[in-house]
Image (cartoon, rainbow, N blue to C red):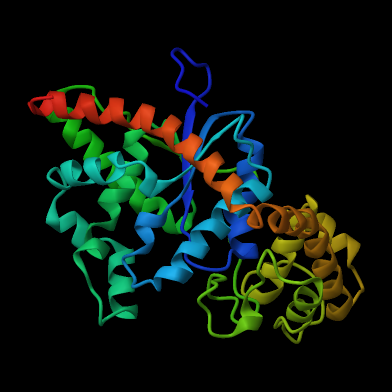
Length: 335
């Protein structure tokens, strides 16, 4: 999709890292909503591979994960004729604008970023400069495409805020150059927690494989994992403060089926946890069935994946290079 002038649609940028297996948490927290956004917005969706290398990657595995993530974007229903699909590293302007914006970002504001503190503790043997300046690259991603809206979850609000601060600081120096992005709260979405420790977000990096459900997990694995999901001793299926495990399961079933939590409570009134867990598993299995089938199709044809994402990168670069040119001209570079 090429850039158009005076488009009535607001532009939205979203990205996902190719850092391993994509989970039910990724799907309900972001991916499920992306397909619906295509008809409403001018969307750019990227495989955020540059962000992934703040942690050491095994080259062959990393390359395959990029292909897997690209295939997954198509498998969930993202349409290259409606949206721009690309791999971040295929558009050099991301790294170029990141360097420029790093010169308009304060050391203090980066040092206060929660994610830097958390990842520094988790990867104490590799606290690199890229990890520290990660938010600047994220700001470059957003500002490069004059994004009007950025879908944000609870753990990304701080990154959007620093992007807005950097853009405002740059505009105060050079005029109205960068679009100040606004947060977009998706209509569909849920913060999915671990099935084994519902006080923690579901994560593919969890050492307990029963804590998370992968989008391409087999139906048997999905059923097994939900059957083993922790609950509590109260025995009733009702959302209440402090009932993290049941609240999480109700939220998952509600988001997958489109039923309200109240409707879920009514449906399972007087029924046990075992029956509820099986119903959740069956709903998730059916939701993922066409995605798994599509994924198997796309991942077998890497040439087609490369063709689609190369075309997307060309469209993205057309927008990005113009934006970098505007920024550099304002600063005073000889172009």
